[in-house]
Length: 249
Length: 249
Picture 1: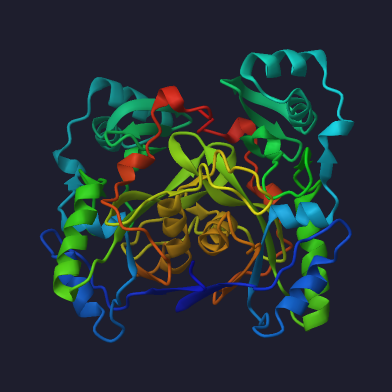
Picture 2: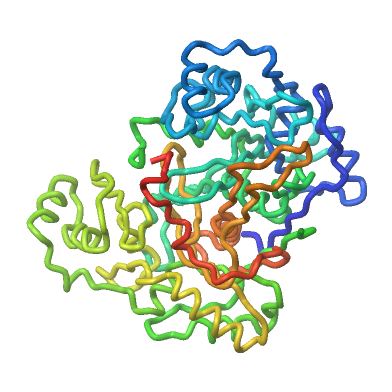
């Protein structure tokens, strides 16, 4: 059990371009305030996508008839609508110009995670990483090798959710830490068994880090220090609820 | 913008009983590591409910025919089912012995937040505070008066959610801080307007605190230090999404 947690942003992360090595950038940026054993590295999706070249010029996109029609109805860019459709496995809802999508990874979010903010270049949009768990593992392995100890990595994005206003940061990729804290079968201080107490700590870590990274600032990497994470392969895919088990859907 | 965040649990919080003054308990517990100006106090719902006497002996509950019937079908305690129904405004889903409810506050969660864990006494269950915002304000005002500066308070509970496995901590009550960080109309580093970027930071603060409080430990109060909160009346009721605006529902 941790006594206290410290979170701080890694300063000096430059604008990231396709092909950049994020672990190299982080190791360089961390010179003054280095990553220590036990730290978790939390990275926003945007720089991972940029480094992986998950950028798309809308000028190369030819929208389908369906995309053109719907875009016209809601005054949207039909090329953007087309990209969102291509990034989706399923449209959950489509109304008032908003598309709630299930991405190919199984995440449910607005516009399938396709985003034009914080991207340089006109008509360029940013897509989610193709395999955010693999992205996290790659960065984690590079950092772990360079530093000589295991460095868990969580990749985050901000999603809306039903019933509640506002977006919150959640985990879309993870490597080298247990993403759940599972208390099932354990007994509380009153002697009762804690039955449905599986905490999605990877999501909670993502939310905690967002308090420092914020949207308008160039603070895409946050270090979480002092959390007693459990060692595991780690995968944000485990957070995706199979529809047949989903009582909230 | 904060440079770093520190979170720590207030040690030495005793077992809370109906009628206890939580602000007094916290001020006493905080003697060695006091609450400072700028700190946010994050409190789990359970001790707030206990202090407010929101405990109910199931022995006093006479279940309705409907509760008896449904409980028998899923091997549940009909008295518990009855209490959950009474605490609900609406049943969102009811299957496999699980009840997803909209509480009278408008929160959607399992069992309307009624919980038997970490409660002493046989057949005693704990209900959510009647008005968690008022509970937060009362504690905030008492702490602020005693300490001579504003102490924002967030009251939390752990809820499940659609599409994702595991529960996460969210805010069910808040006082004296802005619960959203609203970036609408602001411009990102690439010159794009951030359109739908309203972050539910009260929920993110709740999740961050959970990383320290955890379920099995007597750590119901966590201090968040270093977050640049905005002053506001604050209310977790603002987090409840009106159904007609809810694109995720």
